[in-house]
Image 1 (tube, helix red, strand yellow):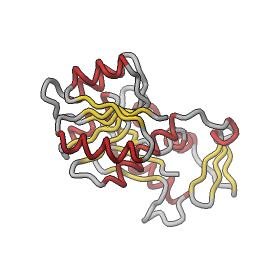
Image 2 (cartoon, rainbow, N blue to C red; image 1 turned 90 degrees about the vertical axis):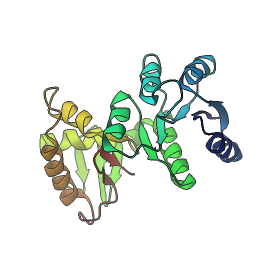
Image 3 (cartoon, helix red, strand yellow; image 1 turned 120 degrees about the horizontal axis):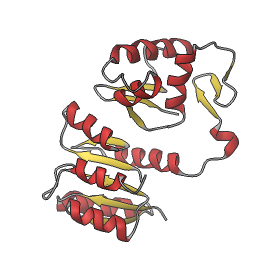
Image 4 (tube, helix red, strand yellow; image 1 turned 45 degrees about the vertical axis):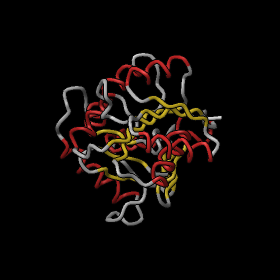
Length: 223
């Protein structure tokens, strides 16, 4: 059974999440503050963490950094902070996704399922391929069926997204991984290359279904 650690100091949110998650066969632990979250995670390592940023004893980003010191457990931030700077800071600290309060339970559950699927051991053959619209991408062989040609940079960018299905990847992370550590603010590069990938792979580039933009934060491949 998947164990989820919910970290929030709002009793109503904690109660609602505990009831709904347990109804869907998740095992749920809770913590009201950052110190309690770190202790709970060490005592009973969770499979996923749902974390508020506005905790009474420390900022949620500190909790993320504390967890990232020893675990790669997926972390979904659930916060009332809607500013792009807060979202990017949490993602750069190591969070895997960000949901803004007030939130829809169905959306949160979908994000949980997506992150959980991503960390489960994949079938070796299936993990080497991905689908975008009518195209099947062979990541190992660098081929696309039906045939579509990509530049080396387009391949790098696409592969980073496809190997992390459902995960929000920040602009800075993509820039540094694809173009190099000296890049971090050249977001125009990403916009141009993502537009080119959508024109080549999406059925309707103006309404992409798979190569998605999260405004002010980054990009996501939605299978």
